[in-house]
Length: 457
Ligand code: UDX
Image 1 (tube, rainbow, N blue to C red):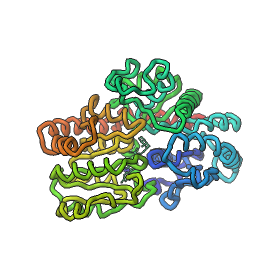
Image 2 (image 1 turned 135 degrees about the horizontal axis):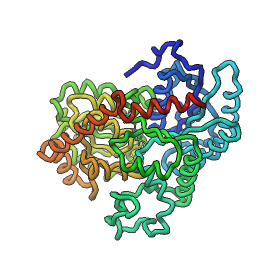
Image 3 (image 1 turned 60 degrees about the horizontal axis):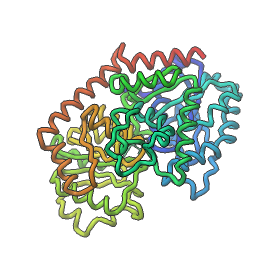
Image 4 (image 1 turned 120 degrees about the vertical axis):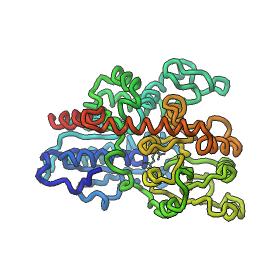
């Protein structure tokens, strides 16, 4: 891993890139990792960001930052309905983004701009970039398989798969193997039409871009990558996993509780199950209690991230019964936010119970930690199916969220022979990741191609 701040001035290319992240943790992390990758390859970096969830400038003294007013009212600055949130931002950011970009392009005190790189969700930026005559590349932060599923979603109502019917949950989706109807990356929103509109625009404006950068690697999603190349006839650069170049910790929006590591230091090798459901997913109190009892009954030590806001209607741990923690006798450690990558890399961590967000999935693969998947919405459904049934590096909690099922899943992964096989498979996948970064490996080549492509503008 390189330290971007140590890249010497004489290595600068005299070209600048402008990047624009979607202001959610799972999107900010990969975009800023990509910015660091490109900085170490000689480009100067300007980040345009919304006022909502700004990245921590202090961790990036080598970047220039511009904050734009996002126009969000206090009641709108929430991820409770992410589709409504993205839909709104794609309208309210148009004028401030255009003004900021125009100013940056005209700034002669800085290096000339080679191109703009935006998250695929910012579909409005295609028209802005075109009007200002600047090339635009797109970063899609999810897996390729879920991107293809999102691209297909607007066409699935006419095929009868959507809205999802209880009686068809187990049916395969012919157009998207190996997904079943219940794996479709649907996201609840007040108006389903908003979801289809957002996805259609995301896909259309990605197809109209100068290139697509992916946080994935060829060996992981070979078949999907080939389909993506057929569907998106633009240059495609699968340079991931980005976390192999730079950790996500410097763009963490919440303080990472380092007591996680000192607690792990006191635990036996591969004994701990790490539990975290990312930055957006929310559960209800009954689900929270089933999870708590399932963990307790498993008898394994656990490190649990209970993010404030994870349990709807609760501040933090109030729903836990009196004496619950005391009775565990030090077998558990609960934090509000953890240094996740360090936790996954720790020798005491033996399994990861995750919501199957894409960053979490990649981070787990890179450290060779097998997973228990509890997808909550959107791309997480697709990721969980691939983890459990394609790569077979985890257990899918597909049935009712119930303490007995949870206890069995944890024991299966952490104690039983089944778990040993799963661990072997993820270690094999970890090796594939390491290989794709070696000279001549697929991500190595994709990055070289991306650098020469951008340099040619
Ligand atoms: C969201 C979506 O939910 C996810 O499905 C999509 O793929 C990206 O956007 P999020 O839910 O936050 O992201 O999940 P994920 O993609 O896994 O990203 C979480 C990031 O936060 C990871 O980089 C992880 O390392 C970090 N994290 C998580 C911490 O630093 N500390 C924690 O305690 C938990």
